[in-house]
Structure formats: structure tokens, C-alpha cells
Image (cartoon, rainbow, N blue to C red; front, side, top):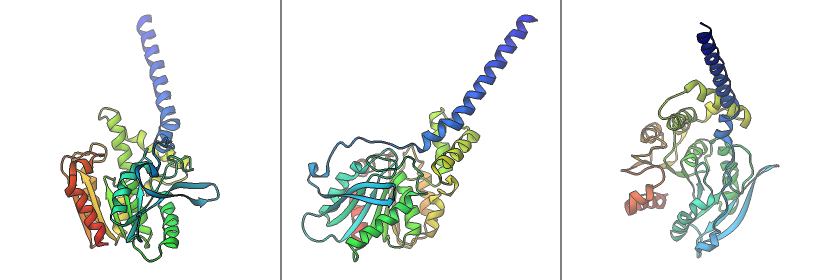
Length: 297
């Protein structure tokens, strides 16, 4: 009896310790994993790959500046300008080659590190809650320089979610290219949790961690819903998604397109592509489809 009692006591103590550890991680570790800043080392300057670039710092408020570059065609005035928004953990350098391709088509671009990334200020990421307002401020700066040409926005992954939310509130944006993005923050956080837990879903833990992340980052995670934003978007949209994307399910791209209110809208499924290789798998056909869409704008 005494031995059984000791075993039960030890098991009870272990259970209590595990529960305390889970609660601590859920409240104090996971929220920061969701919203902590990403510092990507600066590896390449635009001039190193032949880009005609001008350094810029966009003032968002008294304590927040977003660092990036104006990139323009070498000769002649641009026909339009694209804001290029990277995904989580990425940076402006991710878009240098794309900016070069755009410049060859007489399209200028703005590349910048989102708040909480790279050289920009900001401690936390809010997946579009605050970032969509950052986009509006940048659009106003673009209008000062280029008052009479169309402004587009190109977002990949998290950048796509930000772009959709910005398009829903910013009428000065004329069109958008959206790649591989999610429908709502609550769902995608749960999806990622399952991926890292061998398919085991822990929804209450996810919900608490996300709510706590919102408290720390001063935003409402339940309002980060591109699936609602698309219902208010009237601008022309090109939306693409890889059919084999393990990070953000292809069905989310389909749902966004189905709910998109734009009359001029294109959905481009890239067969066999994952989250990162749309251009590699899509090849010239994919590139030409996007460039044709931009040219029409």
C-alpha cells in the first residue's frame, strides 16, 4: 500500500508540475513566439544588383520608422508604382529581384522592412492590425511623389494578409497582387500549432496564447481577418496560391477569392507549388500572367 501511495503521489506531483509548465509556456512564452520581432541581417544593397534605388525612412509616429528604398526605372517616368510587402521573418531584400523585373517594365516600387522586421522599428508584429495603417501612411507619401500614376500593392504570405486589409480601407490603392496568404489569424495560428505538434490540435492553448499576444502587442487578434477584408475590396486583384502549400492551405486562397468583391479579379493556382516557390514552379506562364495584369492597370 505504501509503495502504491508513493507512486500515486509522485505521479500527482509530476502532473501538477507539467500543468504549471504548460500554463507558464502558454501565458509567457507562446505569445511572444507569435508576435516577436524578426531581425534579418542586411545581406545585399540594391545597388549591388544594379537597381536604381534611393534610401527612405517612413515616419509612422514619433517613435516608429520603417526603413526601405524607392526603386525606379533607370530611364523615363514610371507607369505605376508597387508597394512590395514581405512575409513574416522576411525583409525588403526578398523583393530586390522582383523590383528589378518591375523596373524593366517601367514600374517603380517601394520595398521596406515591415514593423518588427529588419532595419525598421517596432517590437511586435500584428499581422495587419497596425500594419494596414502603416501602408496608408506610405501610400500618402507615394502620392506626394507620384500624384498621377496608379499605385499597386504586392504582398506575399503575411504581406498578402496586410495588403488585403490595407486594400479594404485605402481607396488610393488601385490594384493588388496577393500570394499565398491566410483567411484569419486565429485559424492560421491553430494550423501552425498543429504542424509543430505532430498534428495534435490544442485549441484552448492557441486561443489563450493569441489573446495574450494581442494584449502584449496592443491589438485585437480577432480583427485580423483578411476573409472579411476581401468583402470590402473593389480594386482589381490578382490572387495566387500554390496547390501544395504546407504552410497556408490552398483552400484559404480559394475562400479569399470566392469572397472577394472585386469585379476585376483573377485566381491563379500554381500546380504543385509550395509556400515559397510560386515563380520557380509557375515559370514564365506565371510571371507573364502577373505582368499582364499589372500592365492592364
